[in-house]
Length: 482
Image 1 (spheres, rainbow, N blue to C red):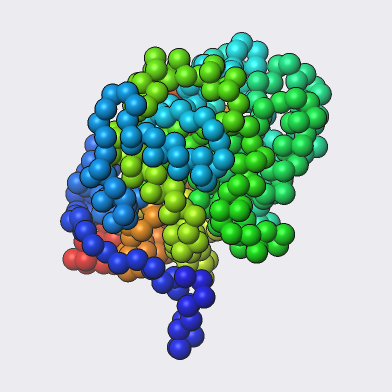
Image 2 (cartoon, one colour):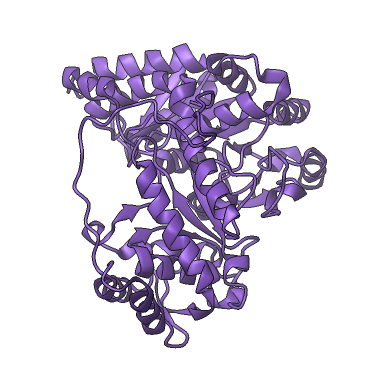
Protein backbone atom coordinates (compact mmCIF):
# COMPACT_ATOMS: atom_id res chain seq x y z
CA UNK A 1 0.00 0.00 0.00
CA UNK A 2 2.72 2.49 0.96
CA UNK A 3 4.68 2.00 -2.30
CA UNK A 4 1.97 2.93 -4.82
CA UNK A 5 2.67 6.28 -6.50
CA UNK A 6 0.42 8.46 -8.70
CA UNK A 7 1.59 10.19 -11.88
CA UNK A 8 0.17 13.59 -10.90
CA UNK A 9 2.16 13.65 -7.67
CA UNK A 10 -0.82 13.05 -5.38
CA UNK A 11 -0.29 10.92 -2.31
CA UNK A 12 -3.12 9.09 -0.61
CA UNK A 13 -3.67 5.55 0.68
CA UNK A 14 -4.82 2.92 -1.78
CA UNK A 15 -7.15 0.24 -0.44
CA UNK A 16 -5.80 -3.28 -1.03
CA UNK A 17 -9.28 -4.79 -0.87
CA UNK A 18 -12.60 -4.52 -2.67
CA UNK A 19 -16.07 -4.08 -1.17
CA UNK A 20 -18.32 -7.15 -1.46
CA UNK A 21 -21.10 -6.42 1.05
CA UNK A 22 -22.48 -2.97 1.83
CA UNK A 23 -24.60 -1.55 4.64
CA UNK A 24 -26.92 1.41 4.17
CA UNK A 25 -26.04 4.64 5.98
CA UNK A 26 -28.30 7.48 7.07
CA UNK A 27 -27.39 11.17 7.37
CA UNK A 28 -29.99 13.05 9.45
CA UNK A 29 -30.28 16.79 8.84
CA UNK A 30 -28.74 19.26 11.28
CA UNK A 31 -32.03 19.92 13.13
CA UNK A 32 -32.43 16.19 13.77
CA UNK A 33 -28.81 15.89 14.84
CA UNK A 34 -29.17 18.64 17.43
CA UNK A 35 -32.30 16.97 18.79
CA UNK A 36 -30.54 13.58 18.89
CA UNK A 37 -27.48 14.79 20.82
CA UNK A 38 -29.66 16.54 23.39
CA UNK A 39 -31.71 13.35 23.94
CA UNK A 40 -28.40 11.45 24.32
CA UNK A 41 -27.28 13.86 27.05
CA UNK A 42 -24.37 15.02 24.88
CA UNK A 43 -22.86 11.57 25.26
CA UNK A 44 -22.09 9.98 21.89
CA UNK A 45 -22.32 6.51 23.47
CA UNK A 46 -26.03 7.10 23.99
CA UNK A 47 -26.81 7.95 20.37
CA UNK A 48 -28.76 5.38 18.38
CA UNK A 49 -26.79 3.99 15.46
CA UNK A 50 -29.62 4.84 13.06
CA UNK A 51 -28.93 8.51 13.88
CA UNK A 52 -25.20 8.26 13.06
CA UNK A 53 -23.71 8.79 9.60
CA UNK A 54 -20.06 7.79 10.12
CA UNK A 55 -19.52 5.80 13.31
CA UNK A 56 -16.02 6.67 14.48
CA UNK A 57 -16.76 5.90 18.12
CA UNK A 58 -14.49 2.85 18.22
CA UNK A 59 -12.76 0.13 16.24
CA UNK A 60 -13.98 -2.47 18.72
CA UNK A 61 -16.16 -5.14 17.12
CA UNK A 62 -16.91 -3.03 14.05
CA UNK A 63 -13.99 -3.92 11.79
CA UNK A 64 -14.93 -5.42 8.44
CA UNK A 65 -14.41 -9.17 8.11
CA UNK A 66 -12.74 -10.72 5.09
CA UNK A 67 -14.33 -13.25 2.72
CA UNK A 68 -12.13 -15.94 4.26
CA UNK A 69 -13.39 -15.12 7.75
CA UNK A 70 -17.00 -15.21 6.62
CA UNK A 71 -16.56 -18.57 4.89
CA UNK A 72 -14.72 -20.06 7.88
CA UNK A 73 -17.72 -19.29 10.10
CA UNK A 74 -19.77 -21.82 8.13
CA UNK A 75 -17.74 -24.76 9.44
CA UNK A 76 -18.11 -23.94 13.13
CA UNK A 77 -18.57 -26.73 15.67
CA UNK A 78 -21.25 -25.93 18.26
CA UNK A 79 -20.17 -28.60 20.76
CA UNK A 80 -20.34 -27.32 24.34
CA UNK A 81 -17.10 -29.15 25.25
CA UNK A 82 -14.19 -30.13 23.04
CA UNK A 83 -15.27 -27.97 20.10
CA UNK A 84 -13.16 -28.26 16.95
CA UNK A 85 -13.59 -24.51 16.49
CA UNK A 86 -11.75 -23.98 19.77
CA UNK A 87 -9.04 -26.43 18.72
CA UNK A 88 -8.46 -24.52 15.49
CA UNK A 89 -8.31 -21.17 17.33
CA UNK A 90 -5.92 -22.53 19.98
CA UNK A 91 -3.72 -23.93 17.18
CA UNK A 92 -3.65 -20.52 15.45
CA UNK A 93 -2.66 -18.87 18.76
CA UNK A 94 0.20 -21.32 19.29
CA UNK A 95 1.38 -20.99 15.69
CA UNK A 96 1.61 -17.19 15.81
CA UNK A 97 2.41 -16.49 19.48
CA UNK A 98 4.11 -19.73 20.56
CA UNK A 99 2.00 -19.90 23.71
CA UNK A 100 0.86 -23.38 24.75
CA UNK A 101 -2.08 -22.47 26.97
CA UNK A 102 -5.11 -20.50 25.76
CA UNK A 103 -8.19 -19.41 27.72
CA UNK A 104 -11.09 -17.96 25.70
CA UNK A 105 -13.26 -15.08 26.91
CA UNK A 106 -16.03 -13.04 25.36
CA UNK A 107 -13.87 -9.88 25.02
CA UNK A 108 -10.85 -8.05 26.38
CA UNK A 109 -12.38 -6.63 29.54
CA UNK A 110 -13.51 -10.15 30.46
CA UNK A 111 -9.85 -11.15 30.25
CA UNK A 112 -8.98 -8.26 32.55
CA UNK A 113 -11.57 -9.47 35.04
CA UNK A 114 -10.08 -12.99 35.08
CA UNK A 115 -6.48 -11.75 35.35
CA UNK A 116 -7.24 -9.24 38.11
CA UNK A 117 -9.35 -11.63 40.17
CA UNK A 118 -6.58 -14.18 39.92
CA UNK A 119 -3.55 -11.96 40.62
CA UNK A 120 -4.55 -8.62 42.20
CA UNK A 121 -5.16 -8.32 45.93
CA UNK A 122 -5.64 -5.53 48.45
CA UNK A 123 -2.62 -3.22 48.31
CA UNK A 124 -1.31 -4.48 44.97
CA UNK A 125 0.40 -1.97 42.70
CA UNK A 126 0.48 -2.50 38.94
CA UNK A 127 3.05 -0.48 36.97
CA UNK A 128 2.06 0.14 33.35
CA UNK A 129 2.96 2.38 30.45
CA UNK A 130 -0.54 3.91 30.48
CA UNK A 131 -3.90 2.87 31.80
CA UNK A 132 -7.07 1.97 29.95
CA UNK A 133 -10.41 2.77 31.58
CA UNK A 134 -11.65 -0.79 32.15
CA UNK A 135 -8.21 -2.05 33.14
CA UNK A 136 -7.90 0.55 35.85
CA UNK A 137 -11.45 -0.19 37.07
CA UNK A 138 -10.81 -3.94 37.35
CA UNK A 139 -7.56 -3.39 39.24
CA UNK A 140 -9.18 -0.97 41.69
CA UNK A 141 -12.24 -3.18 42.21
CA UNK A 142 -9.87 -5.91 43.38
CA UNK A 143 -8.07 -3.63 45.85
CA UNK A 144 -5.10 -2.60 43.72
CA UNK A 145 -3.84 0.64 42.25
CA UNK A 146 -1.94 1.62 39.14
CA UNK A 147 1.27 3.52 38.44
CA UNK A 148 1.51 5.13 35.03
CA UNK A 149 5.13 5.09 33.92
CA UNK A 150 4.84 6.39 30.37
CA UNK A 151 7.86 8.31 29.10
CA UNK A 152 7.51 12.10 29.35
CA UNK A 153 7.21 12.33 25.56
CA UNK A 154 4.10 10.14 25.76
CA UNK A 155 1.79 12.87 27.04
CA UNK A 156 3.09 15.55 24.70
CA UNK A 157 0.27 15.91 22.21
CA UNK A 158 2.60 17.12 19.48
CA UNK A 159 5.88 15.33 19.03
CA UNK A 160 8.09 13.66 16.45
CA UNK A 161 9.02 10.80 18.76
CA UNK A 162 7.95 7.55 17.05
CA UNK A 163 7.24 5.46 20.16
CA UNK A 164 5.31 7.59 22.65
CA UNK A 165 3.90 4.42 24.24
CA UNK A 166 7.28 3.43 25.72
CA UNK A 167 7.61 2.81 29.44
CA UNK A 168 10.14 4.88 31.38
CA UNK A 169 12.69 2.29 32.47
CA UNK A 170 14.13 4.38 35.31
CA UNK A 171 10.66 5.02 36.72
CA UNK A 172 9.89 1.30 36.51
CA UNK A 173 12.98 0.35 38.46
CA UNK A 174 12.35 3.07 41.05
CA UNK A 175 8.72 1.99 41.46
CA UNK A 176 9.67 -1.66 42.01
CA UNK A 177 12.23 -0.69 44.65
CA UNK A 178 9.83 1.75 46.34
CA UNK A 179 6.79 -0.56 46.38
CA UNK A 180 8.61 -3.87 46.76
CA UNK A 181 8.36 -6.64 44.14
CA UNK A 182 6.24 -8.71 46.53
CA UNK A 183 3.47 -6.10 46.17
CA UNK A 184 3.55 -6.09 42.38
CA UNK A 185 1.57 -9.02 40.93
CA UNK A 186 2.52 -8.05 37.39
CA UNK A 187 3.79 -5.26 35.17
CA UNK A 188 1.46 -4.32 32.28
CA UNK A 189 2.33 -3.03 28.84
CA UNK A 190 -0.40 -1.86 26.47
CA UNK A 191 0.29 -2.23 22.76
CA UNK A 192 -0.97 1.00 21.29
CA UNK A 193 -1.74 3.20 24.31
CA UNK A 194 -5.43 3.83 23.71
CA UNK A 195 -6.08 6.95 25.78
CA UNK A 196 -3.16 9.02 24.46
CA UNK A 197 -3.73 8.56 20.76
CA UNK A 198 -3.01 4.90 20.00
CA UNK A 199 0.71 5.48 20.42
CA UNK A 200 2.97 2.40 20.06
CA UNK A 201 5.88 1.10 22.12
CA UNK A 202 9.12 -0.03 20.52
CA UNK A 203 10.23 -3.65 20.59
CA UNK A 204 13.49 -2.55 22.16
CA UNK A 205 11.58 -0.89 25.00
CA UNK A 206 9.54 -4.04 25.59
CA UNK A 207 12.74 -6.10 25.70
CA UNK A 208 14.21 -3.76 28.31
CA UNK A 209 11.03 -3.85 30.40
CA UNK A 210 11.16 -7.65 30.29
CA UNK A 211 14.80 -7.62 31.48
CA UNK A 212 13.86 -5.51 34.51
CA UNK A 213 10.92 -7.80 35.26
CA UNK A 214 13.19 -10.84 35.14
CA UNK A 215 15.69 -9.12 37.42
CA UNK A 216 12.99 -8.71 40.09
CA UNK A 217 11.10 -11.93 39.36
CA UNK A 218 7.98 -10.16 38.05
CA UNK A 219 5.40 -11.25 35.48
CA UNK A 220 5.08 -9.10 32.36
CA UNK A 221 1.54 -8.91 30.97
CA UNK A 222 0.75 -7.52 27.53
CA UNK A 223 -2.60 -6.07 26.48
CA UNK A 224 -2.38 -6.93 22.78
CA UNK A 225 -5.76 -5.55 21.72
CA UNK A 226 -4.13 -2.93 19.48
CA UNK A 227 -1.18 -5.12 18.59
CA UNK A 228 -1.84 -4.97 14.83
CA UNK A 229 -1.07 -1.24 14.68
CA UNK A 230 1.91 -1.62 17.01
CA UNK A 231 3.36 -4.36 14.79
CA UNK A 232 3.10 -2.07 11.78
CA UNK A 233 4.77 0.84 13.55
CA UNK A 234 7.66 -1.34 14.75
CA UNK A 235 8.14 -2.54 11.17
CA UNK A 236 8.27 0.94 9.63
CA UNK A 237 9.69 3.06 12.49
CA UNK A 238 12.20 0.87 14.34
CA UNK A 239 15.38 0.61 12.30
CA UNK A 240 16.62 -2.53 14.04
CA UNK A 241 13.55 -4.51 12.98
CA UNK A 242 12.67 -3.06 9.56
CA UNK A 243 13.85 -6.25 7.82
CA UNK A 244 11.89 -8.51 10.17
CA UNK A 245 8.63 -10.00 8.93
CA UNK A 246 5.45 -9.22 10.85
CA UNK A 247 5.47 -12.83 12.07
CA UNK A 248 9.05 -12.43 13.33
CA UNK A 249 8.16 -9.24 15.20
CA UNK A 250 5.12 -10.98 16.71
CA UNK A 251 7.30 -13.82 17.95
CA UNK A 252 9.80 -11.39 19.49
CA UNK A 253 6.98 -9.61 21.32
CA UNK A 254 5.53 -12.89 22.54
CA UNK A 255 8.95 -14.17 23.66
CA UNK A 256 9.32 -11.07 25.81
CA UNK A 257 6.00 -11.41 27.64
CA UNK A 258 4.74 -13.96 30.17
CA UNK A 259 1.03 -13.51 29.55
CA UNK A 260 -0.86 -11.92 26.67
CA UNK A 261 -4.52 -11.01 26.60
CA UNK A 262 -6.49 -9.40 23.82
CA UNK A 263 -9.85 -8.23 22.62
CA UNK A 264 -10.54 -9.91 19.29
CA UNK A 265 -13.02 -7.10 18.70
CA UNK A 266 -9.83 -5.25 17.75
CA UNK A 267 -7.15 -7.90 17.15
CA UNK A 268 -8.57 -10.54 14.84
CA UNK A 269 -11.42 -8.48 13.31
CA UNK A 270 -14.18 -10.44 15.08
CA UNK A 271 -15.88 -10.52 18.49
CA UNK A 272 -14.25 -12.37 21.35
CA UNK A 273 -10.99 -12.43 23.26
CA UNK A 274 -8.57 -14.58 25.17
CA UNK A 275 -5.59 -15.08 27.43
CA UNK A 276 -2.45 -16.94 26.39
CA UNK A 277 0.64 -18.04 28.32
CA UNK A 278 3.32 -20.71 28.53
CA UNK A 279 2.99 -20.83 32.32
CA UNK A 280 0.87 -23.74 33.47
CA UNK A 281 0.71 -22.13 36.92
CA UNK A 282 -0.92 -18.97 35.52
CA UNK A 283 -3.19 -20.99 33.26
CA UNK A 284 -4.26 -23.31 36.07
CA UNK A 285 -4.99 -20.39 38.39
CA UNK A 286 -7.35 -18.79 35.88
CA UNK A 287 -9.17 -21.66 34.20
CA UNK A 288 -11.73 -22.06 37.00
CA UNK A 289 -12.52 -18.34 36.83
CA UNK A 290 -13.06 -18.61 33.07
CA UNK A 291 -15.52 -21.43 33.65
CA UNK A 292 -17.25 -19.47 36.41
CA UNK A 293 -17.54 -16.09 34.67
CA UNK A 294 -17.34 -16.84 30.95
CA UNK A 295 -18.25 -20.41 30.06
CA UNK A 296 -16.57 -23.76 29.55
CA UNK A 297 -12.89 -23.81 28.58
CA UNK A 298 -13.60 -24.57 24.94
CA UNK A 299 -15.88 -21.63 24.24
CA UNK A 300 -15.44 -19.10 27.08
CA UNK A 301 -18.48 -17.00 26.27
CA UNK A 302 -17.67 -16.76 22.58
CA UNK A 303 -19.74 -17.88 19.63
CA UNK A 304 -17.94 -20.72 17.87
CA UNK A 305 -18.54 -18.86 14.61
CA UNK A 306 -16.52 -15.98 15.99
CA UNK A 307 -13.75 -18.40 17.01
CA UNK A 308 -13.44 -19.54 13.42
CA UNK A 309 -13.32 -15.93 12.24
CA UNK A 310 -10.70 -14.96 14.83
CA UNK A 311 -8.41 -17.83 13.82
CA UNK A 312 -8.40 -16.52 10.24
CA UNK A 313 -8.26 -12.89 11.36
CA UNK A 314 -5.13 -13.48 13.43
CA UNK A 315 -3.44 -15.03 10.41
CA UNK A 316 -4.47 -12.04 8.28
CA UNK A 317 -2.92 -9.76 10.93
CA UNK A 318 0.45 -11.12 9.82
CA UNK A 319 -0.02 -9.44 6.40
CA UNK A 320 1.46 -5.95 6.14
CA UNK A 321 -1.16 -4.88 3.55
CA UNK A 322 -3.88 -5.71 6.07
CA UNK A 323 -2.44 -4.03 9.16
CA UNK A 324 -1.19 -0.96 7.29
CA UNK A 325 -4.63 0.06 6.02
CA UNK A 326 -5.94 1.75 9.19
CA UNK A 327 -2.65 3.51 10.10
CA UNK A 328 -2.36 4.80 6.52
CA UNK A 329 -5.89 6.19 6.58
CA UNK A 330 -5.22 7.75 9.99
CA UNK A 331 -1.99 9.31 8.73
CA UNK A 332 -3.76 10.70 5.66
CA UNK A 333 -6.62 12.16 7.70
CA UNK A 334 -4.27 13.66 10.29
CA UNK A 335 -1.98 15.23 7.68
CA UNK A 336 -4.90 16.73 5.75
CA UNK A 337 -6.24 18.29 8.95
CA UNK A 338 -2.79 19.64 9.83
CA UNK A 339 -2.67 21.34 6.40
CA UNK A 340 -5.87 23.13 7.39
CA UNK A 341 -4.48 24.19 10.76
CA UNK A 342 -6.56 21.73 12.80
CA UNK A 343 -4.70 20.51 15.93
CA UNK A 344 -4.26 16.72 16.04
CA UNK A 345 -2.04 14.27 17.91
CA UNK A 346 1.34 13.78 16.25
CA UNK A 347 2.86 11.59 15.15
CA UNK A 348 -0.35 9.91 13.95
CA UNK A 349 -0.83 6.70 15.90
CA UNK A 350 -3.12 3.72 15.53
CA UNK A 351 -6.82 3.23 16.25
CA UNK A 352 -7.96 6.61 14.92
CA UNK A 353 -7.29 10.25 14.19
CA UNK A 354 -7.19 12.17 17.48
CA UNK A 355 -8.21 15.84 17.64
CA UNK A 356 -6.46 17.87 20.33
CA UNK A 357 -9.47 19.40 22.08
CA UNK A 358 -7.27 21.34 24.52
CA UNK A 359 -6.08 23.44 21.58
CA UNK A 360 -9.13 23.11 19.30
CA UNK A 361 -11.42 24.71 21.91
CA UNK A 362 -8.78 26.36 24.08
CA UNK A 363 -11.39 28.75 25.49
CA UNK A 364 -13.17 25.88 27.29
CA UNK A 365 -11.57 24.97 30.66
CA UNK A 366 -11.04 21.30 31.46
CA UNK A 367 -13.66 21.52 34.22
CA UNK A 368 -16.21 22.07 31.42
CA UNK A 369 -15.08 18.99 29.47
CA UNK A 370 -13.70 20.37 26.19
CA UNK A 371 -13.27 16.95 24.51
CA UNK A 372 -16.86 16.01 25.34
CA UNK A 373 -18.12 19.36 24.04
CA UNK A 374 -16.12 18.91 20.84
CA UNK A 375 -17.60 15.42 20.34
CA UNK A 376 -21.12 16.84 20.64
CA UNK A 377 -20.34 19.75 18.33
CA UNK A 378 -18.85 17.50 15.64
CA UNK A 379 -21.92 15.29 15.68
CA UNK A 380 -24.18 18.33 15.26
CA UNK A 381 -22.34 19.58 12.19
CA UNK A 382 -21.59 16.23 10.53
CA UNK A 383 -23.43 13.22 11.94
CA UNK A 384 -20.03 11.76 12.83
CA UNK A 385 -19.84 9.95 16.16
CA UNK A 386 -16.46 10.18 17.89
CA UNK A 387 -15.38 9.29 21.42
CA UNK A 388 -14.31 11.64 24.20
CA UNK A 389 -10.90 10.68 25.59
CA UNK A 390 -10.30 13.30 28.25
CA UNK A 391 -11.57 14.32 31.68
CA UNK A 392 -15.01 12.77 31.16
CA UNK A 393 -13.16 9.45 30.75
CA UNK A 394 -11.56 9.89 34.17
CA UNK A 395 -13.32 9.46 37.52
CA UNK A 396 -13.60 11.77 40.49
CA UNK A 397 -11.19 11.47 43.41
CA UNK A 398 -12.21 10.42 46.93
CA UNK A 399 -13.24 14.02 47.68
CA UNK A 400 -15.54 14.24 44.68
CA UNK A 401 -13.24 16.45 42.62
CA UNK A 402 -12.67 15.96 38.92
CA UNK A 403 -9.35 14.35 38.04
CA UNK A 404 -8.20 16.40 35.06
CA UNK A 405 -6.88 14.24 32.26
CA UNK A 406 -3.32 14.57 30.96
CA UNK A 407 -4.80 15.16 27.51
CA UNK A 408 -8.17 16.16 26.09
CA UNK A 409 -8.73 14.24 22.87
CA UNK A 410 -11.61 13.53 20.53
CA UNK A 411 -10.91 10.11 19.06
CA UNK A 412 -12.19 9.47 15.57
CA UNK A 413 -11.66 5.75 15.19
CA UNK A 414 -11.10 4.30 11.73
CA UNK A 415 -12.16 0.65 11.88
CA UNK A 416 -10.23 -1.55 9.48
CA UNK A 417 -11.55 -1.87 5.94
CA UNK A 418 -14.78 0.04 6.74
CA UNK A 419 -14.65 3.62 5.42
CA UNK A 420 -13.94 4.90 1.92
CA UNK A 421 -11.62 7.78 1.17
CA UNK A 422 -14.57 10.00 0.17
CA UNK A 423 -16.05 9.48 3.63
CA UNK A 424 -12.73 10.41 5.21
CA UNK A 425 -12.66 13.55 3.07
CA UNK A 426 -16.20 14.42 4.22
CA UNK A 427 -15.00 14.14 7.83
CA UNK A 428 -11.98 16.34 7.08
CA UNK A 429 -14.25 19.01 5.53
CA UNK A 430 -16.71 19.14 8.44
CA UNK A 431 -13.94 19.13 11.06
CA UNK A 432 -12.18 21.99 9.23
CA UNK A 433 -15.40 24.02 9.11
CA UNK A 434 -15.97 23.39 12.81
CA UNK A 435 -12.43 24.52 13.61
CA UNK A 436 -13.05 27.78 11.73
CA UNK A 437 -16.19 28.26 13.86
CA UNK A 438 -14.79 26.87 17.12
CA UNK A 439 -15.60 29.99 19.11
CA UNK A 440 -19.26 28.99 18.91
CA UNK A 441 -18.60 25.82 20.97
CA UNK A 442 -19.19 26.03 24.73
CA UNK A 443 -18.73 23.74 27.69
CA UNK A 444 -20.73 20.93 29.30
CA UNK A 445 -21.69 19.88 32.82
CA UNK A 446 -23.01 16.59 34.20
CA UNK A 447 -26.70 16.08 34.90
CA UNK A 448 -26.46 12.30 35.46
CA UNK A 449 -23.12 10.90 36.64
CA UNK A 450 -22.39 7.26 37.50
CA UNK A 451 -19.60 6.61 40.01
CA UNK A 452 -17.78 4.22 37.63
CA UNK A 453 -17.10 4.52 33.91
CA UNK A 454 -19.16 7.68 33.66
CA UNK A 455 -18.17 8.22 30.03
CA UNK A 456 -20.28 5.20 29.08
CA UNK A 457 -23.52 6.17 30.83
CA UNK A 458 -23.34 9.78 32.03
CA UNK A 459 -25.45 12.61 30.64
CA UNK A 460 -24.41 16.25 30.29
CA UNK A 461 -25.92 19.55 29.19
CA UNK A 462 -24.61 22.88 27.93
CA UNK A 463 -23.13 25.26 30.48
CA UNK A 464 -24.59 28.01 28.31
CA UNK A 465 -26.90 27.80 25.24
CA UNK A 466 -24.32 27.41 22.45
CA UNK A 467 -25.60 24.48 20.39
CA UNK A 468 -28.49 26.32 18.76
CA UNK A 469 -26.07 29.04 17.64
CA UNK A 470 -23.78 26.41 16.12
CA UNK A 471 -26.69 24.84 14.26
CA UNK A 472 -27.79 28.23 12.89
CA UNK A 473 -24.30 29.05 11.64
CA UNK A 474 -24.11 25.67 9.94
CA UNK A 475 -27.43 26.28 8.16
CA UNK A 476 -26.30 29.73 7.13
CA UNK A 477 -23.12 28.38 5.50
CA UNK A 478 -24.35 25.06 4.09
CA UNK A 479 -27.93 26.04 3.24
CA UNK A 480 -29.82 22.84 2.37
CA UNK A 481 -26.74 20.58 2.38
CA UNK A 482 -27.87 18.74 5.54
